[in-house]
Image (tube, rainbow, N blue to C red):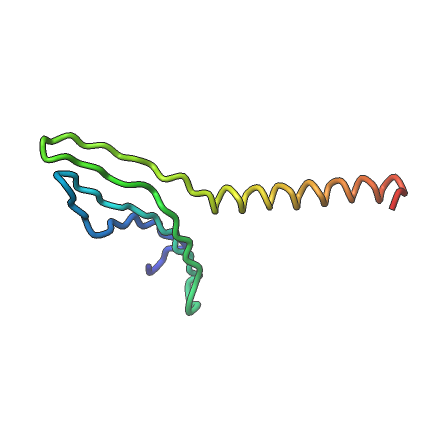
Length: 94
């Protein structure tokens, strides 16, 4: 990671074959590291599952990241709360 601030990595899990179906889980990691610092931040999230049949059919099934949705909803709620409290304070209601 020399000279880069962040790196996006896509990783494949171990393939699992059952009854002619092959499933390969995929995940994505965002790695943030400041140059010259030890350590950093890693954010992993699921991408989906690559599904293939013995006959040659292939599909990608995306996985919805409910944790990310919940975190963004909490962030939006916190920002909304701060804006409403700021409005109340300006009007002298608080």
